[in-house]
Image (tube, rainbow, N blue to C red; front, side, top):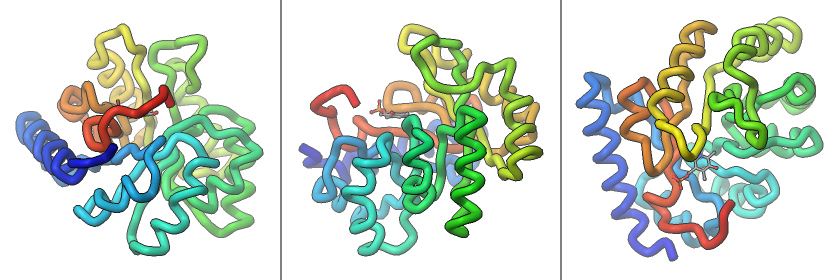
Length: 225
Ligand SMILES: *Cc1c(COP(=O)(O)O)cnc(C)c1O
């Protein structure tokens, strides 16, 4: 199913570089997070062999099944959690992931802080923002973002590195990317995770430091993930 993934990886990297240059940005300032959810280790290995080092997964359990082995084979891999995190999986997430992009509530902040102390592992943390204020979607509301980041820092002693968003499917993503960039500036955050296969060039134009691209590299997923 992932036949040709290394070739598609090269195309995506070229498009990222072109979008960065068009925006007057250094292509090295944009990191590709290759989203490998639903794909198995044998599909991912060729993409690692082609040089990709940063990957994203949306389920802790699924990631535990394939990434410890892949990480053992290739030093220097960086794994991002891009899906919702339940507190009962926080320990496993802290143990496996290098970046948790989906910090979205107080209780999770508290549990992550405890686990990071206990395991002496400190994944980078992004706060997920529900830029479209969608009822079914995770994330803190835009107007609550600055206060939430401040509480994570002040009450839980967490270093917050950035923000992430998933815009509503039926809206112009540029508006959401611009809002996320503005919220990050307001809280002094450097990392901006925004943009997927359909809109990563737009996100780069608006300041994305991390784009999360799955199907454009690995091909179509069999089921909605
Ligand atoms: C699946 C997923 C992606 C990648 O989506 P594509 O459209 O396949 O590029 C990015 N971000 C999140 C949070 C995802 O769940």
